[in-house]
Amino acid sequence: MTEQRTGTNRRAFMKRLMVASGATAVASMGGVAAVQAMADDGTGTGATPTAAPTGGPGGPGGGPGNLAVTDDFFGLTTDGTKIDGLFTIHSEGVDTAPVTAAARAFLAGLSDAQKKETQFTIHSLEWRQWCNIDSYERNGVSLAHLSDDQRALTTALLKASLSADGLETTEKIRKLNQAAGEAIGNTKSFNDEAFYFTVMGEPSATAPWGWQIDGHHLVINYFVLGDQVVMSPCFWGSEPTAMQIEGTTVSVCQDEIKAGLDFINSLTGEQKAVAIASSDKSGESMVAGAFADNTVQAYTGIQGSKLTAAQRTKLLALVESFVGKAKADVARAKMKEVRKYLADTRLTWAGGTAADSAFYYRVHSPVIWIELDCQAPGPLAGAYGAKQGDPATQMHVHAVVRTPNGNDYGKELLRQHYLTSPHHAH
Image (cartoon, one colour):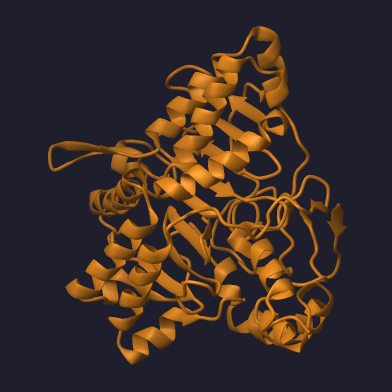
């Protein structure tokens, strides 16, 4: 079964406009209570799938620009048609009690004023207002404004949600951001504290809720419903991706880079001709980054059904290098989904295939979307001896993970919850 939607709908500006979109939620959410709740978010039958952007957030060039959530949520699709039935409310055996307890402790540790800045409704537009650039104005409470005890509570929340690799990656991204800022003499813009936490809804064992961290090169959206978790969209990146800090090399994104190269170089010449769209890697290639929730992107590249067993294993290892940043039971449930649709999974590549090449790859299936993009040197180029305008490099990487067909931010599960829960259905 498929679904198609059409219609239109930012911070203070967008929230004023959201009232107009509330009525569109009637058919899909069921009942007055659902309509009222969804009006804050703009999710409903009036969503518009949008073509993939040609530039970064704000338009070509990727600068801060005029960022806005301009459409109701629809989700990433291949042709503007959403495939239904991919995501259902069912038991996945994920132990969500630790993350729920950690989120409750975090909220309890905030002052009343901080909590007011930090906690939003489960349907809040705040879910979609994340951005990976440094100069973006964020909601929530930042690490800079937390005491040591409060910071410890954010660490506990991350530990309860992420694997050891995921937690280490978040810490290293922040550490590299600080060190690079020091290297170029601009820690006002680039530091390890400008990372903001928000909580959507009330942490619960049964009701839907979630949390978000939003900062430069680091974004995690984490939705919880019972024993199900959706951890997307996520943004992982850094400039530089490796740096000497106090005599030790700190690096990120290396496993993801290596996994991509391992896969592409396992292909035959004939298979590479299908997978590699271009040998050139210049400019920004990412198509579903910040403010691109409704991207429409056709399948391209080599299909899983055309791979050998060994090549499929390498493709799964690539996916797991991202999915494995969630704690083990969450990652296990997601990888089960991924395997189910492995034959329908495509990988597209642009750029070189040597160990030090700059490249872009995209993994695209009905249930997962991954992009890794080696970028040209940006504002932190001086931290690693480069300059803006130099060619793309593995020293500046952007990567995003999404759930296509309407389940980013857990929105498809949330929709089903409102349709089927007795206290919501009318």
